[in-house]
Length: 120
Picture: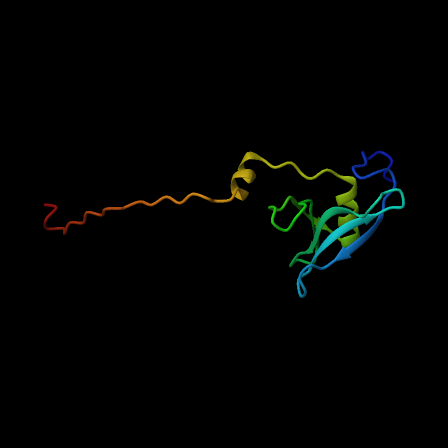
C-alpha cells in the first residue's frame, strides 16, 4: 500500500497509542509501538478541528510551536501521516510568525493638533 513512500519511522507501520494530556481537549499525543523498537516512539500530536476534520502536528513537545497540517478524516489517518511523512517545510514568513517575541519596543508618540482656525 505505502511501498512508494519513503518511511520515516521504519518499513512497517506500528501500532499507534493515543494519550490525552489535558482532559476535555480533543488533542492527543501519538506514540508508535513496534516489536523491533526498544521503546515507544513519540510521533507528534493529533487534534480534532472545529470543522470536524483532524490535524497532524509533528512538533515533539507542547512547548514547541506547531508544525501542522490540517485536512485528515480520522485520527488514524493523522497518526499514519506522522509516521510515514516528514513534517511540512516552514517558509520564512511562518518562522517569523511563530518566533517568540522576546523584545519589547517602547516608543513615545507626540501628536500635534491644531484647530481649524489656527491652521489658517
